[in-house]
Image 1 (cartoon, one colour):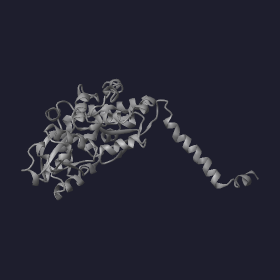
Image 2 (cartoon, rainbow, N blue to C red):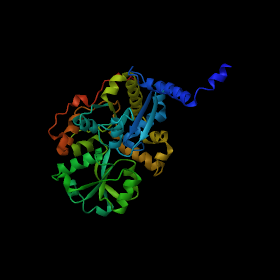
Image 3 (cartoon, helix red, strand yellow):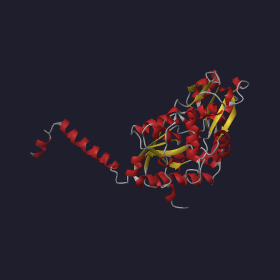
Image 4 (tube, one colour):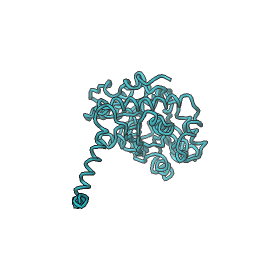
Length: 346
């Protein structure tokens, strides 16, 4: 008899009651108790070698070993990763550290919690067609230059190189061409005369003889020559308020990522390439391993922010960014070494 009564509960009501229980179950993950094992991270291009530690950590099983369920998502430009973080769609972003300064001036507190690199890993490529016309950034005048996205770090760095050599940012046209095939197509079609990009795009451009390297910032030496110091770039950055509410989770993320950086420092480019998803090696295995090898010098071994790195970034951004020019940036709030310094040794 009872079952008869039960069957008369309106289906919509029942569905509503079930939905409410599932919602509370999901919501409890984010309770600020310091522990939340589900984390979404947006990467400014998962297959870019500069951001390789994110996917490599997943592939090596280090997130899982920390009890984390990490979902890695991909956007073609770092600026889109930043947007996803600010809107709360994801809990972390893997992108360039310079966004944390830019965002602070816009009233958003974001901090780098693991610093992957001490050089940009970026290369200014000149198209084979324009080779005779561009010998230094002074020659950017009147040219169309590829960047991943407007407002992205490639855009920032291109503007800085131009200003450093006496140009105004209005002297050239930045064109958003993404990376990989879209960058290569823009070079082939002559839509850009040069552009800033990273490996594996660089290796593919050189292999196809579509361009040559004008400025190489894949090593700390290259970074110093072009930018005057170490330029911390790829990092895991997060909203400071989320970090404060989920310290345990952030520590686990730091443990996993630093373990990967250590692993990378003791393995060859070929061994690293072999651990990555097969479809990342679009130009073939040997070329992909070569692109990792070219970029490896940019990575830190411990996830720690390099000394004087934040100051170099601030100097670069202030040179051309009107928002930052007269702003007081509190650099101590743009990164933390608290979590990486607590990663167990070995």
